[in-house]
Image (cartoon, rainbow, N blue to C red):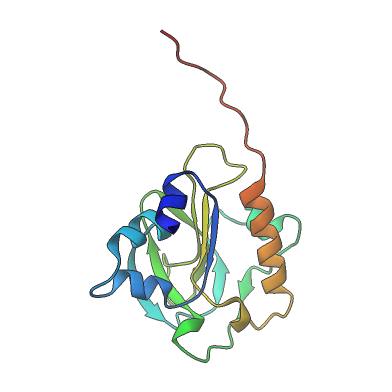
Length: 160
């Protein structure tokens, strides 16, 4: 159902560790991994604190309406608390894992070129495992605002 939702243009916020692992590991769920998560690989559990990825300091998920710290620490208890995943070529990282540079903690897939919003945001971690008690609520609020933001209408058309 989630695959059909995404294919139909539905917006989605995904949260939790082990999702990337289950989708990528044998036997895995390659269609779910590719269509919903937009990752190519799972690399690790307990991949370290999240840190703002290069060039993402002004990203709406980190700033609107709440300011998110540039580093978020974990209280790691088990596998479901954090994954380190490599985004597919059509996705990008907003926050990466400290121990696996280039692996996403927050991965965004945008199905069009308008930068104001996106289709999917994937938290590769358990919000409840974050040490900062305000971060989970603020991340959900910011991500919801980002996913629902109005996008700039197209500036051209095709006829004939």
